[in-house]
Length: 78
Image (cartoon, rainbow, N blue to C red; front, side):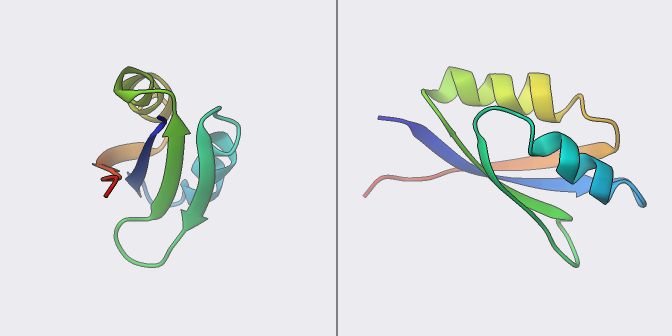
């Protein structure tokens, strides 16, 4: 079963548009929604497992210029 998570992203002022464009190119990120207030961006990730989720968040999202902070919420299957 896939691991799905919401990743909330805080972005440096003036960088939201560029971060959104970069996020839309990352495999595994299915949705990207810039919002008013905090966090600046809500994204939805669906990957094979938690290791792949870590790879997306740490290696891909955290390295995008302008990303200041993330908050990851793994979806609980009930």
